[in-house]
Image (tube, rainbow, N blue to C red; front, side, top):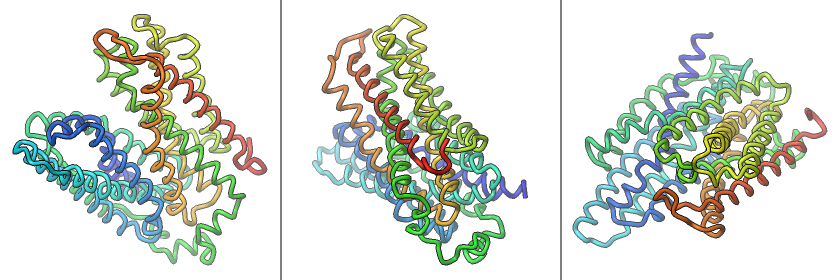
Length: 434
């Protein structure tokens, strides 16, 4: 049984999440796509926003497929993700051809939106939730460890794929990189598709319903009625706010590092923050297994993130580009928020299962991931709005940055984290409160 849970649960989950998690590599090649096809960077950025939006929405609306047949859902994920990546490469090639021959057309960028944003986004959403319930069934005694393993793979994918992508871009060209990787991920996800399965007693829905003794009540509405609807709304809101705050800071990470005079260490800091992101996904989910109430993990995330940001604001650390201690205070905030951002993802499915049970968990988890869809549209935009409309851009060590704008961003994020902490206190207040 111990061997089987790794072979049929953890390994295929990692293969799927290592593949689809490369969506976070977008910043590596987004500028290159803009230049190659001859459009503004703001236009290409919508491809990533659409991918995250369709990730969340496909998870919300296709959770029933995952609930009923993980083999079908893993195949859908494989086809959508890999074909989306392949056709992204094709439309980049087409855009480059049009650009070189001075042909004016919106077809390439629309094709990228459909390929990377819509088709790949659907593959992301279905693939993200496909292994989660299976892992919780294999790791019944420590569900957080099981889900943490998979979600850690999603977080670590960027650190693993980034150097590979940079190498391929140097050795070949941009569109070929997408086409080559589409076949690489096709192989990895197909292996996962073959291996992935539930424990034998759960392998078909009839047996699973017998185990849960709840054949007639296996519906979302019935499951949600277990507690007042405000509790689920509270969970959705804190999940949304944690992602929004995380994306707002992570999207500006490179410029924040420039603000504090660490331009030469941007690459190293990006790798370390990715490690914290992945580590937070695993260790905070394992911590949730040890705590009496899993919502306490979210309290720790919000409290820790708030304190780290307040420390930056009180010390004016963002305004200093030479004091090592103040630089470390800013980096500490970046790393803690990365860890909390990852930990929020890895604990959400197990939090839902702790309170609502395993019936419909894939559908319930999928619906909750709609928060990710909306946060994907608001997180980056929130940061851009604050930095563009407050403070003043100045030249620091040949870098155009807005220190006051970033300080204002920290203040807004602190308020949102504290608001999330307050909401967490009132979730399941009458039962399982701590």
